Image (cartoon, rainbow, N blue to C red):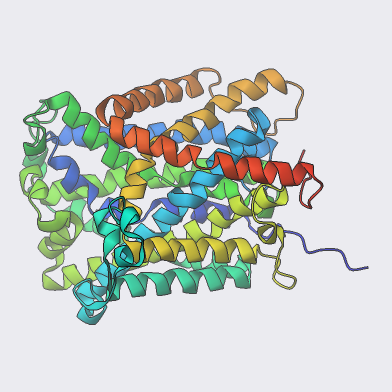
Length: 486
């Protein structure tokens, strides 16, 4: 009898590192400093925020590295939460990840790709209207009043169709095999690191920019922070930097496909996060060496990298940066698609998601159904245009589950003291405590400053409870896919 297909350990250190770095480097680094400059106008403090964001990310990575080395299974964070707490908390993470966090990011980054492709080829842009779906008219009158305005009449444009095409193409590539998916990841990560490297060298080599860094540390609020105060502006600017650092944990989702994962995963997490931190800090130093912060904050549509490239290379610089953004966003979407489907696969393998998602492709050994489900829902969010609202509402979920996962290091040290730990969290117990202290401040800020967002985000998380109870009951009844990994 032929044994069922299994996930194959085909990813090496370089592959895992490019998955970390490539999933992090999307469109944020090309725009974030301009947005941050609207909140804070002090060059030294802004660079400090990028350094702080990198250190904060690395603190999280060293904690995740211990967990990944202990439990090198598909699903990563889902498995860590299950082992530390229960399958209920793990499911709520996986549910929210599928419902909006992962699929919403897929939609957002794919749309960023399409938007900049449209700036080169206008027929693919947002201005090219294709169709209108009167969704509100299809519902009963009593229900129409409860439908958000942006969902009543869904406008479909060329950019949305291009974004759907990107998601479909990269989903198909990753169904073909993990090697095919990681080849795309390696290629596009190398290309975007090279593009940013060229921008860094050219920017830092430009003379006469030293005055742009003065005053270095005087707390000067930006225009957007005048009514809120400097500290509130500082928090808003920090959130933009942290957004650019996000998705570093994607590699833990594919842990079961990483060769010598107990050693490779910690190295990849630290190498990838460290590399991106250096690139981000140097890139922002290069921006400030070319343009003063006031001009950076006022750049139209926050396209700071494009404006810097125009100063450095002339009109051709604008085109070069657009190409770099296309490379960065395409590679980022690929990494998100590759990793995200493994969470649904892990849930289904334990009977807590659609059974079909637990099956691997008989020839390619990839979670094909999980990839298809993820791709379809990502395209629905792309066409609905609601992904940005949903991502905002679930910001509380992303922050909450990240801190809960780092806290799992303490809990598992207590509940599983004899479990082999091929890698032990560097600086324990201080480093995870530092991460959690900062995490609590951010959580407090989100809850206090945005109670409506917090409430809706909490409801989206809790919407998974009926599904959890249903799948849990079905699993207890003896349905397939109930085995627990150890």
